[in-house]
Length: 141
Image (cartoon, rainbow, N blue to C red; front, side):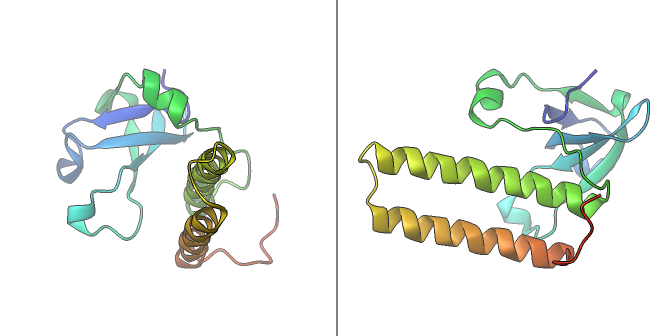
């Protein structure tokens, strides 16, 4: 049974996703899982691609170092696809900010370089929120 955040490889169904890598973002039912496909820059995918797949339609990818470098926690908020996608984007934002902080603390990046990178990451997260149609007055649960 896959864990939330596990890397998977999509099988033969659906055809357009055959062989693509994704991440488990939520358990939908006893044997169905929501999988967010990794973006492929050459396809110009602006919106995330989320599939609802049976466990038999994907295989787990060994993600030893990947799981260590890119931890992913389960989402416990309001279960709506746009909330789960935003949560995944927010976790990635948080991870990148922590890397920037570590690099700046270690003297590898200047404060101004860290600020500029953090600003770009924030703009990207804000764009994600707006594209997903998440309002500021959304209920917590």
